[in-house]
Amino acid sequence: MKSVHVNQLGYRPGDVKKAIIPAKSEGFCVLRMLDEESVFEGTAGGVVEYTPGGERVRVADFSSVAEKGRYVLCAGGKRSFPFTIQEHPYHALRAALLEFFHYQKCGTDLECGLWSHPACHTTLATVHGTDEKRDVSGGWHDAGDYGRYIVPAAKAVADLLLAHELSPNPDAHLPGVVWFELEWMLKMQDPSGGVHHKVSCHRFNALEAMPHEEQEELVIAPVSAVATAVFAAVTAMASRFYPDKARELLSAAGRAWDWCAANPDARPFKNPEDISTGGYGSTGDKDARFWAACELYVATGEKCFHDFLKAGEIYTGLGWSNVGTYGIAAYLYRARDASDLQLTARMKDALLTVCKKILHAYTTDPYGVSLGDDYRWGSNMIVANNAATFLLARPFTKQAIDLNQAALEHLHYLLGRNPLSQIYVTGFGENPPKQPHHRPSAAKGQPVPGMVVGGPNKLTHQDPALKAHCTGNPPAKSYVDHKHSFSSNEVTIYWNSALYFLIAVLGL
Image 1 (spheres, helix red, strand yellow):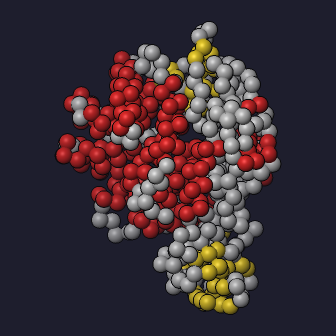
Image 2: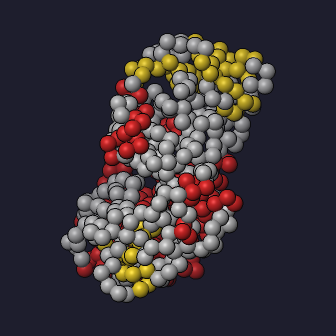
Image 3: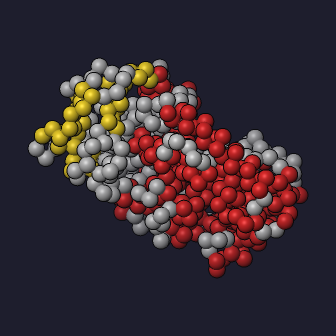
């Protein structure tokens, strides 16, 4: 294992450039790989006791190295993985993160090299508890399995569309990528206006099975309030990106909102007893309704949605299970002249309160991230989401800390400057995941490129592979690159979308 940690994809010439080195190594140097010549020698900062990684480290700043080239950083006789300095070190990564959604397509013949396959999951699906059959083909496989779930789909779509809206250099083809998922989501709406929670088989199939090899019955899970509310939010949001589809999207969003209004006390979703695929349940749906009201008000200007917001609480969060910050972003960025001063102030305060909490954790972490010791399932998504919070808060604060830089430091962590020197995206850098928990990758013995894995998870008891390899490890090192480690090495559409948002909004 490396003990000198850098961003293995590299840095732009003018970037702040930092590495993490062992505490015993005060001095360090940067070597040009072309000729092994030293181009910089420096003294690292003071010793930091880093409890989440069970280690003592120093921060080595080599920002003055700006000449383009390929380098390694050396400290105490140890070398980092190689890295580059160039103008656009992340362009290929950004493209691959978005291309991942092509690999996840369901219901269509897929041409993607080694992982190509004929159309999958094209049979009619059975509405749970009935004999009714429906066509719900299409959309993206959610993760390492082949289920399709409305709740995480809404987060992924929101990340991508919001990134497209806020990026200084948006990818022109992104709306077409996202529409493939939205078309499927529209099929999941019941005539009542409610939205079915998911469609999958009754249980997960073998890890080595390709999508078209999953032939078991498809089952449409019952309507849920949280799925209906996030569906209302994301279809209302999407209406401004697809003018020719705006009427259809807003009609669907309105019917979903009406269902929510008619079912204020709907029970949280729970898997039926005969279904054991991903639950994506929630203890409540108030944050989802808040997001929906924000998006519907922005899209329609109707007073009823504004009244709902002014009378209610403010919610925050950018995960699939807490989505309030998407609503705040919609209102603060889009309502503008139609906004209410008091409501605007409350939303800004809520966003900045979260931002301040994340910043405190960031400023005390030598690796430049904001998790403290709370490494949980999907910790890499939380890293990217926290960075996204910084970027969304930029217009509303005079914070002395550079929020752009804080977000960029989080990116460095995900790309190798972490206690394991692990790049957490397949196919990139010197030390990427090679055995992700992802069925097409397992079936072909080679990982699909551009997939974000979950990352360190201190709750090893949930995962036999993680337990076998990481029991006793400190939180930041509780990760194993093993195809059976579903809680540290699986992939999902909403982890990719979170990292894509970070890179796109930074303009990288």
